[in-house]
Amino acid sequence: LIAVTIDGIDVEVPYGTTILDAARRVGLRIPTLCHHDDLCTAGVCRICVVAVEGMRTLQAACATPVTQPVKIQTNTPAVRTARRHVVDLMLSNHYGDCTICKRNNNCELQSLAKEYGVDYYRFGHPTEPKYAIDRSSPSVVRDMNKCVLCRRCVRTCSELQGVGALLVKGRSVRSRIATFGDKPLSSVVCVNCGQCINRCPTGALTELDQTDEVWAMLDDPTKHVVIQTAPSPRAAIGECFGLEAGSQVTYQLNTALKRMGFDGVFDTNHTADLTILEEGTELIIRLYQALVQGDTDIALPQFTSCSPGWVKYLEHFYPHAVPNLSSAKSPMQMFGALLKTYYADKKGIDPKDIVVVALMPCTAKKFECNRPELCSSGFKDVDYALTTRELAKMVAESGIDLPHLPDSPFDEPFGDGTGSGNIFGATGGVMEAALRTVIEVVTGKQVENFFDHANILPVRGIEGARMAEIPISEVGPVPDLFKPLVPDWDWLRGVTLRVGIVHGSANAKMVMEDIKAGGPFSKCHFIEFMACPGGCLGGGGQPIPTDAAIRAKRSKAIYQIDSDFAIRKSHENPVVLQLYREFLTDGPCGHIAHHHLHTHYSP
Ligand code: HC1
Image 1: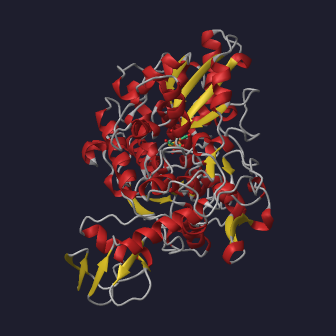
Image 2: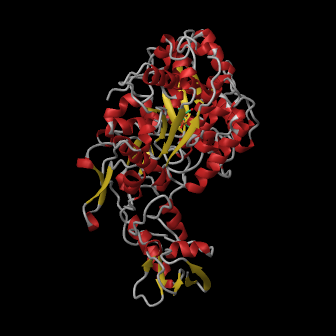
Image 3: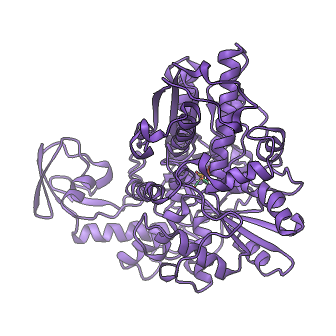
């Protein structure tokens, strides 16, 4: 340990601790901008400068490790002046007006300008934009006039997501953030995950805002506008209204949506449950064909397909493995397809007049709902995917004080989903939901016989890529729903189900390389992939900031919601069972289900 004195406070820290982290240990906040806890050090913005005894110049706290006993001052006239100049210099190159910026009141540059008393543009301020705004992407808008060159987006895209759609071009004053060949974002390998947006300190990167389009639909009396809400936003949207991260506002949100004029408010958890039945059945079919029928062409491991950023990542970087993707549509798309068929029919509404909005934690969902493959009813399954941030803005615009609303239920004919559907929002959740069902369906016994309270802890956690093994030591009779598919389960007795869980695209890259090399993940039967760190709860459309501590709180809330549900297993969801009786009458992976709930991605 090394003895350090910071602003007169003594502390001992391990060798190599940065000054920034040492200061945090004694409760001192040094301002940062290019630094982000999820990313490696860049040390480029210099807002975190401090005075270090014996050093002639001020040092960047985020990039200076403590290697010997030292005295540091974080608040001297020279430090304050330097920080103010850093902000002034950024503003001299930052075109835009705070009042009309999406990040107004949630902008790190704006906060620093306030904190350091910037009251005029000491080094000037641009009066004209230098760059055209890139609105080519269905998910992400790039306005480089607001960029402060912190490079968080570049590090996010390459390090955290393993994508590399963004890069730094030019040196010194000519530095700028660019795409390959300066192409529009829609023409490069961007996977639309929006993780860059979540880490951008200013309004340089934002989601494509579709709130006006949704308002127009809500104001159109000829339209029947319904909304489905994904598992993750309910544990996060409260943050936009001053609530602690991880506050659950599921039913208050329903009230808000009804007051805003939505004609139906539905729970995406239902179709997450339906996904488990469809994707789980698909897995059983693949395993039967591979293990019993000896078909060597069957693509295994099967990969989940509900994270559109992951699907796009696979298409871009590992197209040969597209056949491994489950053909099941994501829960969002499944719900859209049902709303424009089953629901339209039940309600006697022409599907052309139904507008399906989806509240999602994810910017890639905007891309997904525009995929031409996803319109089995003859109409787009989902018309608009709004991020948690966009919906929070609409709620605020409506004059609604979300935290103080009474509760309202989800609307009929669907009502509440299950706990299994809800944990889709956290890394490992899809796998846990699938295993709860597979274990019960195959063994004929309650999952609680094998895992306390149906909590399958081996698949939970935050490790970026992990595996678990579930031995199947006993089998029961085949339930009626699955009888058309397999005669018995005897072939599964003694099989050890190997599953993988991966979140963050850089981890996906590692696992895909492992599979290519015949490593441990290639032995898995089923792998859950989520493009975003933490899974959907850390999606690119979630409230800013989203960091590791916030992700952990949202995750806790999601598992709490699961525990509070009376029904926690997808195959027990009465609405799903009713759908198989009334609409998808030839069962999971039958022709009807295939038409409405499955799709096809081309390598
Ligand atoms: Fe997700 Fe999903 S869980 S993809 O993470 O499968 O976005 O929350 O809605 O579709 O259910 C996102 C979240 C979401 C889908 C479900």
